Image 1 (cartoon, rainbow, N blue to C red):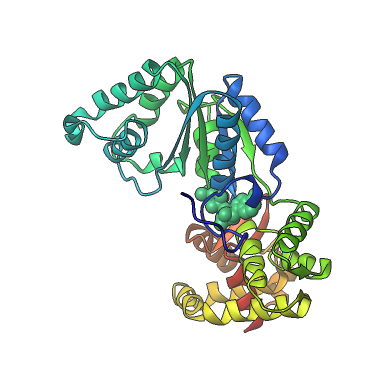
Image 2 (cartoon, rainbow, N blue to C red):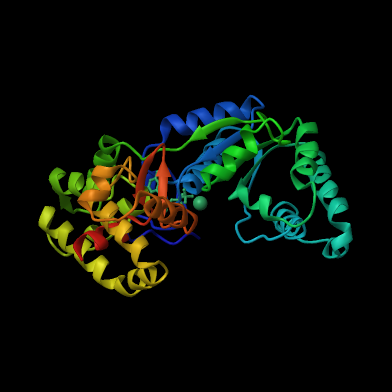
Length: 342
Ligand SMILES: Nc1ncnc2c1ncn2[C@@H]1O[C@H](COP(=O)(O)OP(=O)(O)O)[C@@H](O)[C@H]1O
Ligand SMILES: [Mg+2]
């Protein structure tokens, strides 16, 4: 039996539509694509809600039709061999002993796909953090997977990933096997209005109250970035106050930043002095479109444009910064707020 959810603002996992905010349009788009034989590529920064959305879509699909949905997270796989292990475990449940052997990898892959086809059911497979396949040491991984996937008529796929650039290269470069083989979906933040009604409903259900001002403030301060929003409401929900107002949410945020100080100091130690100065400058502004512009550099005393440009590249590679269509922001929204304070 499933345990009752104590706090409705979940920070991990998926517990059904009741605890899932909006994503109606995205769910519709994805189910429509999949049920019409089009595979999907889902891209967004981390913690926006790709994994949650995949589970929500699968929940919807399984309710609509007799189908089998398989979710695999390949973030921790480092080779095609690992990939096949995870795939087999997810789909078949147990592993054939011969698939343990490296040289049998391709054979096992063939077996898994054959198993899916033989099931006679429509199958949906999500491969989360799919960009990981580009790090596998084996040659021709993309072409191999593509060749299998291409032949299947009863198995449909969601390829999901957080590394925007890598994901886009995989699916939009003419020279790559997966070129134009899927429908692309860039997942954005949930709209504030949808979050408002979601939060009000859940507070009411728990016989608690929160002001719309508090909801707006929490949402805006983390730019609607889903996980950070959820963390704030999870904390706000657990307060004893009868009415949660902006002041309480501000206090919640201060507490979170204090608790995480050690982590943030570690982040600071990962970067050079110049990189830290740039991080602080971007944190101060919230987001920056032209960090190499002379006005920005002058205002924040960042030195030469070439230095800023080098720092930018390094911070992006370390995933401390994120570049969303030319908008630079600090990937960890709480870290950003902490930097702004110090
Ligand atoms: N639509 C949603 N409503 C409520 N919480 C959500 C929603 N989407 C995601 N979350 C929560 O936000 C967090 C990050 O979502 P996740 O799906 O793991 O992001 P991603 O896969 O993009 O990194 C999770 O804690 C998840 O529970
Ligand atoms: Mg995820």
